[in-house]
Length: 449
Image (cartoon, rainbow, N blue to C red; front, side, top):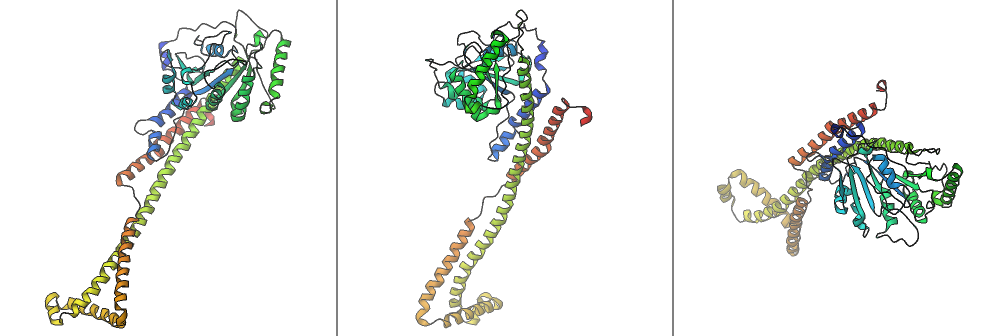
């Protein structure tokens, strides 16, 4: 974009410590997830769940043909000349522009360490070498809550990119919170590659797409601007995926006091859109925090309830195992004992085990004898085989039931789950409610609470 930049004023060293309510809320929510001891991510992992910590900043991707003013807009927004600008294709890869404590430039691997949720980019062959990050100390506008993604300038023809630029931009767009499409009025606005990517993005995440006629002050007279916009709109409407009602394409350009223009400049509307998205991100983050707390609490409650069922089931299995094992041992013991008792006289038995126990042995022997006499002599061997198999089956069932028990939680595990549950319910949820109240207080009257 044309025009000079407003010189940055010298910042107070203490300004870096001053944060907006939205920035503080997003940062605190992020810390609730990544805390080393009681972070929700760690708690969820111990429960077999996978939670992603919320981003502390929104992602704004800017795309368009080369020399559409993408880098110039970023420089204007942060009030620092951080991106190269010019007619040539200055941006050949993806550049993250974000705020930080120190001015720094990062290469591909370092950039992916800074943004781990963008590591799937490694699946695009060759793109890693064309990913970088520029960290600025600027605190202008809402830059502390924004990460811009400057994309490669798009051209038609024989231009060969070192990676699959179309699919890479589409993937970035799916991750972004906002997608700004800049159309250059100086002849490149109808770049087919740009329109093809925009059409694909519209199918996947059309609610994020916003169109702008950049460098509007260079389009000549008002009639020339209207003609350019009509051409762009007509080309967009030819594509089914972009033929929407209520299509808008505000005119924007970098304001230059030394070169005034009568063209309406809606660039402040872009800033308002970014601020609105930040506010929505704060609300979504707080809502997601509530959902994640509920998920963790429900999972813990489910695990404790299942443990109680497992304990009850294990007790039942233990009783069954004991009953079958006892029968499997007692029946053959009585059978053998009855024959031994019949071989000893009553007087000798009483002398060995006492009168009372001798009477019990005699009665059991008599009962076994009755059963044995009832069985025909030629079937007694078959009975012994069947009886032995039955006793073996009882012992097998005893062993089977003993192994059927489910693993139950240890006392230490139960205390840990109870601790996590109390932490989520008594610490995280009240803190979330407090953060929501603080957020609403900055945008609503006091009497509304």
